[in-house]
Length: 150
Image (cartoon, rainbow, N blue to C red; front, side, top):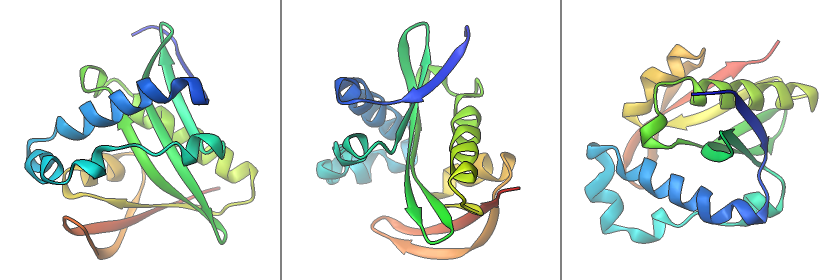
């Protein structure tokens, strides 16, 4: 991989973001059957893009991952974090989390929070998130985690 650029995503990026979202989501065998049974979940909304809450990771002019976030009281919720399955384990997810952290801190947030499905827990722990407990989601229990800033 060459240089990775992280930038704000725009409406013109939606087709690629949607493709990365779908392929990344379906790349996990543990989630595939559940997702295919609920195809509406595989549709990435344009709301976060139009609100300026999507960061795109770009390598060689191609979007290879993205993150969406939501502001909350004193924190930022990491809503989505997806990397092209062919580019996983190259530091793209870590770079996106770091950029979300940098931007959240500059906006006065004190932490990033995330609901992690079981197969993503190890990644989030590796990049510094701490487990808070479990919550119920559409697909069963998931772990709530946080990353304190500064």
